[in-house]
Image (cartoon, rainbow, N blue to C red; front, side, top):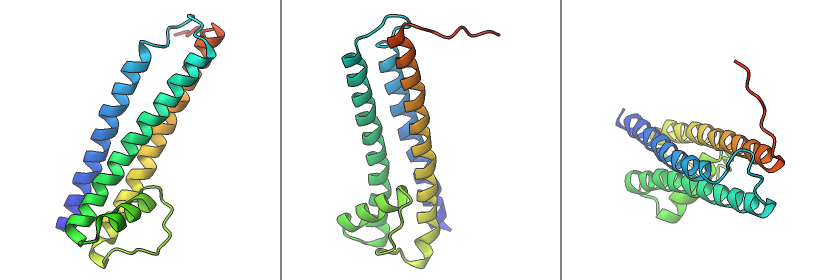
Length: 145
């Protein structure tokens, strides 16, 4: 049972990391994408590269958090724990490294967390790309109530 509590704690930690990092990225980008300002395409490109770097960093922090759990509680060396965590978080699941039976549900929790966080990142990228396209084109959709 303590395994599942640790899994829930790490899920909460992963969401917190993504929430804080994602909000920071949005606040940063909000001031740099002015509606109708027509930023140069190079500026938009650099903003997207920065966004992808920030999101990748958030995902790597989350994967590392799960890897620390496996290293600490299962006793794997950190390289193996990080590999397993990355494969699990991304839901690749090669199966060449398998956790002990009592840790398998925790690994499932990591996979579910990865799906949610990667989906969240995709939604953020989509929203920001749409805003950049609208801004670059100098067109804003009128929002009717």
